Amino acid sequence: MADNEAPRWLNEDEQTLWRSLRSFVWAFPSAMDRQLSHDSDLSTGEYSVLATLSESENDQLRPSDTASDLGWERSRLSHLLRRMEAKGLIERVPSLCDRRGHDVHLTAKGRATIEAAAPHHVRFVQETVFDALTQEEQDTLKTVLAKIHAKLDHHRQQEL
Image 1 (cartoon, rainbow, N blue to C red):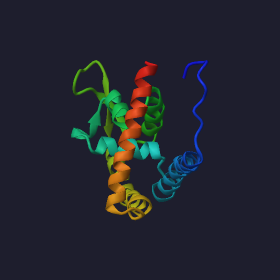
Image 2: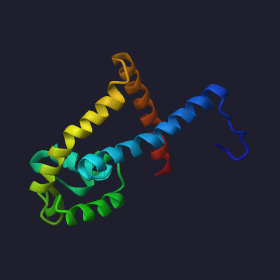
Image 3: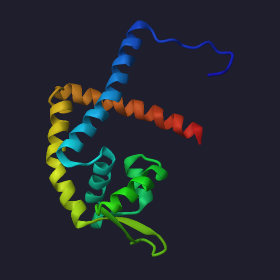
Image 4: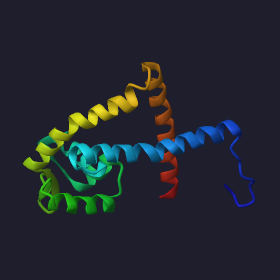
């Protein structure tokens, strides 16, 4: 918005929808954190990294690929990886692509942890998201989120 441009205020319906979306954006991650912590003693970030690694070839990825898959900044991932390594969930190993760097590898403990956590987490997601929506609503949500993500990507590109 240009400095001399008047703001485009939300109308009453937009304001109601925005408040509902904002409430969801704040409440859902907290509920997910509580579920993972209670059922698996994992944070959402730890679960996300373990899931990403468990779905990769050889249970191993470059840190940059892991961050990219998760949509995170590398610095955020680095701090989390240090904590996960200390817990024995992951290890850093020589890179499969080039021996100068290191990859993140899922340990046996990490594999066991994600395999124990996944059924509880999938049940939480199923019950809180998918059971609450019809198939048509799920399709609509998928379309809506894709449009919002596209706008976010556009804003991110403008910042670079």
